[in-house]
Length: 312
Image (cartoon, one colour):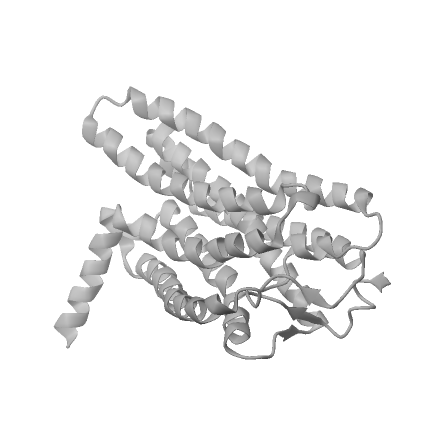
């Protein structure tokens, strides 16, 4: 027995999907296709927002932040998973595990706060349209984005520090494809109820409080949209807000399942497949959700493609 930082100094073996060897090849092919699509989609959003003046607005500034977050979020776990699925070496060093835990928690926490900021932006656009440019001036947008990033990394530092102080025991096998908090908590070999309560409170603050704020914003947005008399105006408002709501639902649904259920009822097997969803599927879907229903983004993409053709 010993702490996370003593008895597990040699690192861990990531079990991954070795429980289902018949799935490993299919997963490798699936992830090898979807990971590049995720990178391409999010890089496209960032590039278009930089090149097209019509997309240099608060909404697309925050969307760029979200796309960059998703790029980092998926890259913090997927390359490791591809190596584990393809080869026989499934080990991860102690330092690598701590770094992965910290980065993954930091990026996930940042996204929780950033989605609230994006909801506030939609609230200002729909409920205060005449004052929108005054409210969402560039300095405020930069400040809100910075608060999201700093808040996310601070939350991760606290949770990772508490995790490292916990004594773990048993085999050096992690029943997951990356170092995720619930799986490490399952390995605790002493009564950690006090520490677990602190961590749970921190997770409630970073997950449920933002979710409640987003819900409150959309209650006001719905009331404002219902007062709009023109059908075209309603459709436009529901279009931009609907995209954000779908992203919120996908992200918070999986986060609540993984981080807010009691540890004794957490299933590592189910958790692995839920983690696949929010580390690969959701970051890939986000650019599609925002572009398929967005005329500005589609227009900017056509403009760039047309310029490319003309130059050739």
